[in-house]
Image (cartoon, rainbow, N blue to C red; front, side):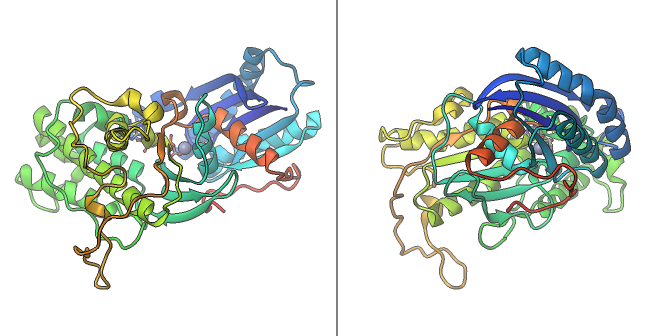
Length: 401
Ligand code: KG4
Ligand code: ZN
């Protein structure tokens, strides 16, 4: 089985060739340099750039893999969610190629692809697993009992965490894309300088718009200006040190919120064997370090190797006493009373299985077509039928199902 994967949902034009689950080539052309000047993606410009790049990118992926059209057995393309014009270029190209070369076509969900980026490695996750999907448009916890079975158990009620990184970067005057810029600025900042509240959202859902407003208000206060002061001018009032401290404090809060919810999910889903991080924000090194340190606590008992995430543990990893609990944290393992307050009398219970943590290799954290081909590979192996290329639809917004 040789799959040509195609991805164009946002501002990356990408193609890849996957042979029986092994990656033969992976080509990504990013439009980041175009959009740096604007501070964000302009959908029409993105669509036009995809149009220029898509055929050369596909040709290069085929050439790099040393295969021909005769060798390719399937075509896979992202059809939802994403920017309408961007999706249109990828899906129209894939439909045309499928008809022209008479190949079965698979229309793949972008978030499924992000999850499957964790299979582009020698060590692969085991089921059942929990996936934390953290991208520019989504923040979700997904339970997967088996391949190609996605059950959303938590989702953001407003902004996605990546969107929050991007918006706060703008307030701080840091360049697009905001996630990597915040991460870089945060390296020189004090993560405990500013304290931001954690959202009080029931269950496994998230909310990030309050955090964004809390950062904005604190910046306004720090700059001694009123609430009506234009947010895009605040950056001119901040020192480099303040920007670094805001970046580090926001980043720490966002990571804490994500990992707290993951802890809660692990308390409900006790048979989990793997925790899988997916989406652009999963590239964040502090997040990788924080998740790995929790994994390390388990490894003190010798049964929780933190897998690839271990590579990202920064120097100065905290020492953990033997009796300290693992991922999930002992502190959040207390159950809740009916009023929603933690039930202090309840004792933490042991997990049935100690999950391993998986992060995609950094080259596969952002948008790429290797993950699209891998998601299609597991759809095909799960018995999913191809899509009629004459009928394939696209949807800018859609839920995983
Ligand atoms: O998955 P992705 O490439 O595209 C979408 O599907 O949305 O995710 C893009 C998001 C952006 O919000 C970007 O700022 C964020 O991922 N991001 C990061 C980092 N690298 C990318 N956020 C935090 N830390 C990073 N190192
Ligand atoms: Zn993405």
